[in-house]
Length: 493
Ligand SMILES: Cc1cc2nc3c(=O)[nH]c(=O)nc-3n(C[C@H](O)[C@H](O)[C@H](O)COP(=O)(O)OP(=O)(O)OC[C@H]3O[C@@H](n4cnc5c(N)ncnc54)[C@H](O)[C@@H]3O)c2cc1C
Image 1 (cartoon, rainbow, N blue to C red):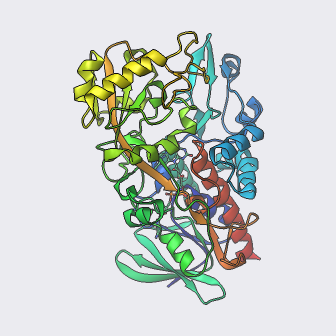
Image 2 (cartoon, rainbow, N blue to C red):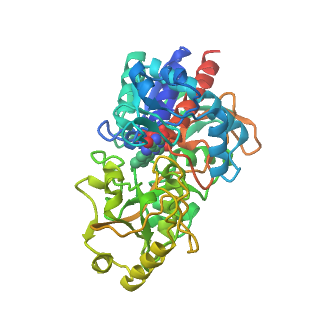
């Protein structure tokens, strides 16, 4: 049996932020990771690395990364004011996001980014994914001008180095299975360590071991029938263990337990994420084309908003379609706008020089109906509005069902490319109820459970139905730091 002041379960972004901030309070910390070192890092390691935080000016951005005078002179960074961040969170979650949690997330996001930088995390301007040249000026859109260098894998590496320097002990192949709880206080965890049972004792435990996205049985149970058929975009280790352990001792479930973040993902991608491919099985440029189901019909408004505000929801819409797939169809006018993920080696793609020639190539699709859908859509496109991919341009296709609200251009310029996608689940929204000051977990009667904290995907109440991109890593850092500081103070008091 090993003894520490504090045990952190998991070794993704939230766990490492919790471990670092607990060390800042002087606590001795053990990090227990179910995966081997090779496979460690959780979903955080698969993340693209964009991070959404509140900023009002270039001076705020400079707290996070270097911005040169030339970049300032030639760029429009936009803003993501606290009000804008709140608006996005509230409107996307149908006004259900927990007021306290969203306030912590939004108001602490910039300070937390700056804290990550102080721990050695390197950030860069997000030129690749959310920017374009407008009248000679670089315009950043979608309110997310900064990403972590090296993506999620880079983030985990930087935090890992910081944890090593700070003297955090990491145990791999160590899967927590239950909490040591005497009915009053959590005093440690039982684990399976390299195939044998063992126990770690501590004054407090922080659970930061993800949701239940990789567990098909739990997905079916909570998200509903069909969800066992989704592909898993990231780690295969997030099986809901932390949630199960906490619920077993009476922790309060909270948030959107039947909801999750899920996106369009290559139809023939492997069952779980592949670290060598990272997030590149995703296909996020559908806003410039059409999404077609097996009946040859459209089923969502592809241009409702920037992909940042629809992609996390549309994976679930794809899952609802017969056969759980959708083709994304583009013409050559937008080829240059398609994100890098459309040009990877492993991609399910067909091409043709006319819509009639493309139709029979779309595996599983009613070809005649598809041709009709494109004709009806082309006829509905507004010719009087100019296409502009850097703003919601209002160039719509109206009078068809569903409409396309922005970026609607006729599919008329060969060659035509189509990409087959299915649903890839990212993470589940249901979690535990925590104290806003400390990250301590509440029991079902809303009393804090002594010695138990949680962070990251395990925090319930923030996301319902949908999610603004780049929020997972920031909320992991904000609530990881909160729990690490709260638990660290408590064990050193
Ligand atoms: C493909 C992809 C792309 C993404 N892109 C972005 C992005 O660009 N920006 C963004 O903000 N978010 C992104 N996300 C979401 C983001 O990665 C997650 O929301 C965030 O990383 C979750 O962090 P976490 O620390 O809570 O969980 P994780 O990083 O998943 O960490 C959980 C850890 O717990 C471990 N674990 C699980 N069970 C046990 C157990 N029983 N015992 C011990 N350890 C256990 C796991 O091995 C893992 O190390 C992306 C996710 C994916 C999958």
